[in-house]
Length: 224
Length: 230
Image (tube, rainbow over all chains, first blue to last red; front, side, top):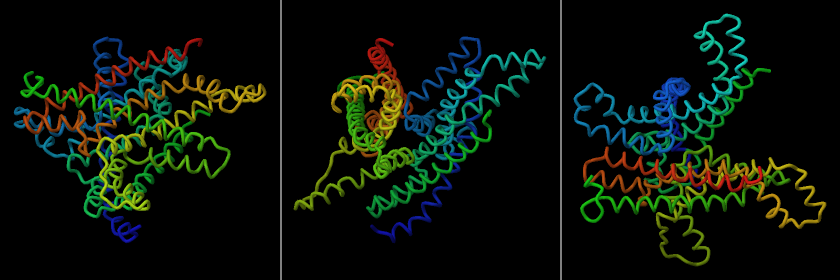
């Protein structure tokens, strides 16, 4: 055990954790909106709209996240037209490519989680709202969405943890996130175990925090 | 389309073999995972606190740490660890493990953690009376597990194992960082030499979709088989 290396690499890894957290929070933020949008589209009665939403979530859940990142980072740059538009400012940055890929990926999973949450809402609750003369729009925003969010908290907590692990793939497109820096230190010092313990410890700590925050929220917003 | 031609002119046959490699690694990893589950599920269900702790440590660490980090640990540390063990037995030559074994081990350790959780859940949801009835009838511990618990457990475990399979299949794309030529690595090579990454990565995505779709179909049949009588 090389404790000196563990101590000296800790601040570097902690600095890289900031990148990981930035990637995570940005993709979760945008992903939640996309997820909500596609969950609503899934419940639409128009068969084309709900099929479209279904195909979106099926494709993004059926392919590895690595493929999605590579298509966006390496693939989209190939299209000449895109290079001439303002989108190129975003797409040439690996940072934004990673965020786009993570957002679309977590959006697909979130839409499934929210959809099943919407479907498990008891019809009686909506009927009660209707019989009280509340408009459909307000029933949706003030009754269905809050209940669905509460319902999907445990599954969404898992999704956050999966996404946190997913951000490690940003290191494959030259971003120096926690895994990227860990790999760099391992490949220069050839001390994989020490670095794994420190980097893994930081990841586990984040998992622990997320897990407990979700647990707290579940308790706070429980129906009982 | 000529990019996908078989033979020397296209990448069709290379990608075909790469797909077979992905399937092989996934199956190998799944089996390694079952082996780990076979060890750690009893530990997690054990009466002894210290054994529980070992089982929980394994599943918590592996499920809380990115797959890529585990792969790097085995990729950079694997041969070192084996050489260390070999040196105890008096063997000091350089040992190199091939990428397939490293990959299957790394993904296997990960899928093992998920499988352990699935099996634990399945065993715990079997009615306690089943264990007691077997005991009362004087069925041996061995027969109790294989003839009574396992068949009931599989029915409950298969839907969740199908999820583990999907995760494992997708995780194998990460072994491409170690240089094993599976779908992702082959697409990377092809994209590099033809300067057509969009086409090859999209095609890789289609291959993965095909694999997940076909395996879902297969698993659904298996599920129907084990749910007979319910």
